[in-house]
Length: 456
Ligand code: ADP
Image 1 (cartoon, rainbow, N blue to C red):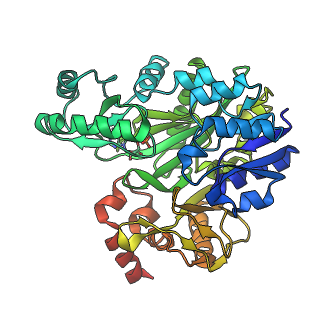
Image 2: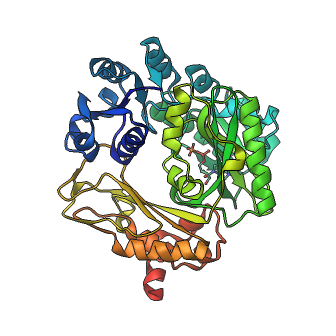
């Protein structure tokens, strides 16, 4: 096992990793930027070390700063969390070269699964259906020919992409010619890589993902699905499991195919395979995330398995320690992402000091957050303030708990999106489980909020 972990991340996930370390009896050192000096993870850590200024490029994204911090503080492993350096194969390789354990897939696995366009091909070879689409687009002529073959509308996507950024839907050849240079330069600016590919645009779809865990001995399990169809501009805001859109047979088949294909393709550690599911229940693979995801607690509530501890144990070379038969999908869980952003002003990210704060509690309620009274929300990073996760024996019971818990949640001093979640829990499409990824964008958040005021 590893004995001392450097947590190279911030916010709620730094706290989550710290908690996993504590349950494993492993020491935790938190690496922080100057902007995060007063963070809860820093306060609760065994030790903390500043790795640079607020600009993430010179702190959380700086491999030399992170690795030297691990060496100086006597750590033998680094947990990158999500975002930042979590899927960077060069970083994972440098960590290994310094005699440290990277908590995640090995560098060669990260490299193999880095290009979204390539992974589509790889997993299709191992039996996964993918959205009709192209490989990497070589030039404009190639792009136009591929779009013609696939059929408009198509979605142009950055191959190194993530977080719903830089994707563009186009309806015609003329539009495609116009956006190709923009797509490439946006991809370059956001991800340092201008390679792009395209997929058939599926107008009505649900986002369903399968959580997997594979140890270094090739033993793999799936931990069922999460439905992440409640999105705003392709970014998830609420996740739940089981998916209200899947039948028991459909989910078992998809989960089984997912785990078989990634084990066959040589995947390792914890990961997530994302799919789009059309109105007829057909699932198409879109991408794999080679890291812990924001929404992992949904799965933890249903299975009782600590996914972050599992990541650490797998990276340390331990066998999984459980089999597929040990993994229940018990009851129903919903996660609400609580963001510091203003729904009334186009979800403008907010910063400021938290003046009043109350975290919800009680049976079946989990609140993962780094917020506290007096905390200054810095303007430099993403707007996630915390995650409220509720569990109930049925979807209806989980929704009832969600309503009660959101009612208890108080955050004052910074504007949050709590009202959006309250509105969702009284909206008909959500209550009936009949929604696709475009629900929020189609209705518009202003209309959504107004409708909920009429109901409540
Ligand atoms: P990212 O890695 O940037 O998050 P994804 O490929 O995971 O991008 O897609 C994010 C979201 O974008 C999906 O959940 C879905 O809402 C939408 N999306 C992705 N691919 C398609 C597609 N081919 N057709 C329609 N919507 C799509």
